Length: 269
Image (cartoon, rainbow, N blue to C red):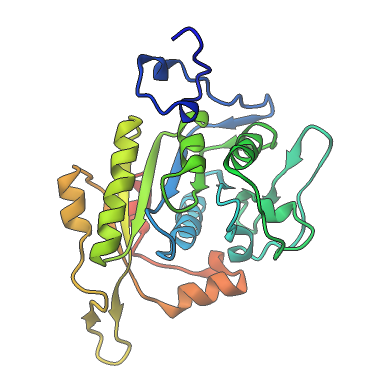
């Protein structure tokens, strides 16, 4: 179409012009080699904690890692890593915060005066912040960037998929049937936009009893294998309900938390 502005969110049509959508530019001081979006169909399944643990696993393997916190209205990445200082920069560029393991982070909470200040913005403004975090932050040399997405399949998800060079997504879910249905919506959205699903993580999949050593599926039988088979997703992981994860995120010590449940999964991404 002659009047196409290469922003499919403006018309919603599935047309041939999709191939001409222009990605947001990367600045000359940054080189991000791989971008992985971590998504969930709904909130409350532990997407940000999984994002944090994946980033920590990659950093422990010696990779140069970054996290772009795209959950603008509900940012939690800085707290998980215990980052309290604000981002610095000049009129044109921002410098990301850096964790003890060297993970570079940019989040809206690093720019707000108070962490609890609400962000009451409409979709186009939220999308503009995402592209600024990509284009106007001095990321430097990064092997893998994890994008912590907001829940759902709305404007921000579409902005990330269309404006950032996303190499693939990791979907986070929990075992309930309702969550499984919503996860399938996220998988279908990724397929519509030709973005590979690199893996699925079922969080809160079971509880390991500290007394008997047995496992108990509190939310019912696991669904991740069935959904993964349905959509030909080879890489899956199941994470237990572990109070230590919640404690580490609350205390800002997620880099000290160690788990083998994501190890093999992480290096396959």
